[in-house]
Amino acid sequence: MDDRVRENFLSRLMPRPREIEIPDGELLLLSENSFTFHGPDDAAARKCATEWLQRWWNVSGAVFHATDAVSPTLPSEGYRIETRPGEISITFSDGAGLRHALRTLRQLAEPCRGTRTISGWQIPPLKIADEPAMGFRGVHLCVFPETEKLELVKQIHLAAYLKLNYVLLESWGTFPFVSEPDFSWPETAYTQEDFRELVEAGRSLGVAVCPAVNLVGHATWATGGKSGKFAVLDFHPEYAPLFEPDGWCWCFSNPETRRVLKHLIDEMCDVFDNPPFFHVGCDEADSMMSCSSCAAREPLGLLRDHLCFLREALAPHGCRMMIWHDMLVDRNDPRWAGFTAFGHAELRTPELYRELPRDVVICDWEYDRPCPTRDYEIAKFFKENGFMSILCSCEDKVATAKMGRSIRDNRLDGLLGTTWLRCVGRDFGRIYTALAHASWNPGFAYAPDTDDMAVFNTHLRYVDQDIGVKRYEEFGRLVKYQQDPVKLVSM
Ligand SMILES: [Zn+2]
Image (cartoon, rainbow, N blue to C red; front, side, top):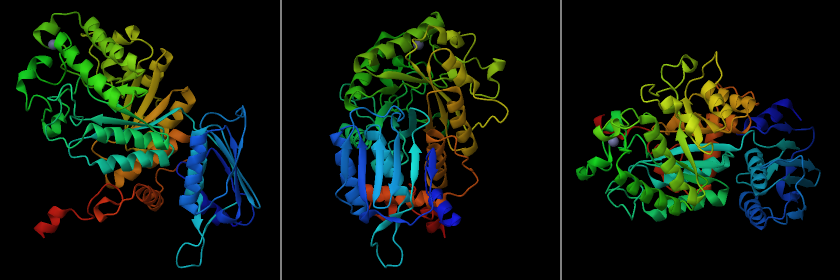
């Protein structure tokens, strides 16, 4: 096979498998080769594979061989693909592994050439050994009142397509609580049924959709510098005692705060069907414990008790608490120079990690810091101290790739890509492309300067087809129009 043809096939893979070989030989027509699957007897995975083969390539008649024990060489979510003339053989460790194998083939498959419309699909001869480099591969999405549900559906499908396994949905005053109806924007168009549908969409694709909501700082549930809005107090100023006087943090010493937060947690855990993780925020909580009641208390104990209260409220739901890391590291500690550290020595918050239960998950948000001369010392610190430690990226491709390697080399627990207000257009493609490679296979020498635009758009078209997008405004990278409509008017 010509090297250029080989390279063209490889360049379409996002993420690149850990080991992939394209030996010399003829292309294989998917419809004329029998698919054989080897793996544990998993009815749901078998059904899914049968449906996908039919829908994507009009292929039927796959044969499944149940193996009693998973091969010891095949880790969780792993798979192998080997082709021979007449046969495409797939070995998988579990349902996730089977789905990942088919997703890889989908990215590789090329419509047969020389006809006006698709007559079949072809792949090169293959030998693939693949599995993820880390157990947690996630993306964090914001649900603002103006966020359209389709944007979330699309990103949950895209996450699965790119082999991520977690989506965190942060509701900025958009989750409608029945027990506490004043604790969301009255205008939110979201229903609890909408959130249930998003959770179910993820589950059907092998993605755990988990809630995130700010229960420490960022209590306005709206951007501070950009909007100055407040989901609760703008409409209900009477709830001011539940927050610190500047509104930015919840008031930890008020027992009524806990009553409200317990209701919020129970209801979200129910709608998210007792998710594995629940992110409670805890970043940039500068004004915490600033009211006259909190300030009179011993700060380390008050913050610890607040976090432990949240953790204990989550425990009956089998749900692990995630927090951002920045308040737990001293802003003046030279060890963290160049990293994100906002802890206050005078509030003793940098000592808190010693007293936190080790099942709390620490999310180190270094975002776009590639830190060329240093490794990610804060994430390593929390790992060394017994916590599950996750690095969090944003749009910088160099930083994201470096985080992937740091997680692999230091045996950290995973990578969480964040999107915030940037998840449209070019940034949308950048964030997901870098995240897919770095979280699945950080060993791949992904060249961040390479323009993956057309490849990413092709993958996104498959996602749009999967979810049945039908309108001009809804296709593509979460931009409704190619030209800003305001400019159209002013011209
Ligand atoms: Zn207070």
